[in-house]
Length: 276
Image 1 (cartoon, rainbow, N blue to C red):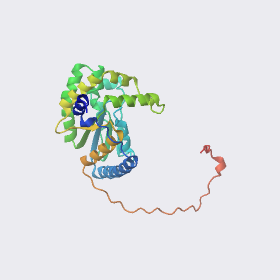
Image 2 (cartoon, rainbow, N blue to C red):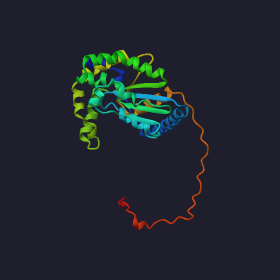
Image 3 (cartoon, rainbow, N blue to C red):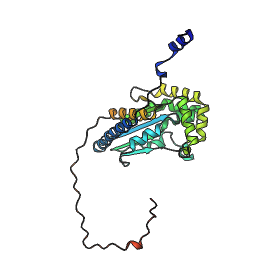
Image 4 (cartoon, rainbow, N blue to C red):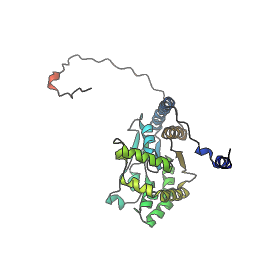
């Protein structure tokens, strides 16, 4: 081995080793198992009248949406709701900053998942200049107190930050641009986020220094591997809320009595074409 090769070997890091691709059969089997546990969890939340808020933050294309989709896929949407707010209106801009988020907080027996949240102010608004420096620093100072009030009111608050490398983000952006089924996911703002990678990194670090508290910590998800990120996040979420399986009574379907009913002629109804 040459001196150059030896130096290259010494300078390499364990994290640079290529991670073996997750077996597809194992992934779906484990996902089914975890989703069953999520059903038990959300039934427990309903029964016990718990109030759960889960925040999903991170860079664009970090995989937040995919995780949210796998969490909610088998759950009752009346119990587990997703909130993804758009650009604030002129009226919302004149309100207390947290006001538009407060109206979406859960009542007893509900889970609310925020696909981006009040942390927009510490991220995109700060980096893109959509807020003033005074508004930004006021947010960083008041956010821990705001979250403390939520927790003291009985809300279970869980915060996830999805971390993605610049190489993986670039690949995912390229996939979105080239795939007609994913093109809608790509926005002009994504271009700005790529060109301001360092600014977003600094903003995230500053945000963590103020809001990664003992009472309300951030949980970081390595999301370069989407499938692993989904399984790891769901698995962690299940440990954050103690729950028990609710035993349901056996349900017996009643027999249908069609006595006295005559169905109108099917020819009088408009059926869709059966093309498949």
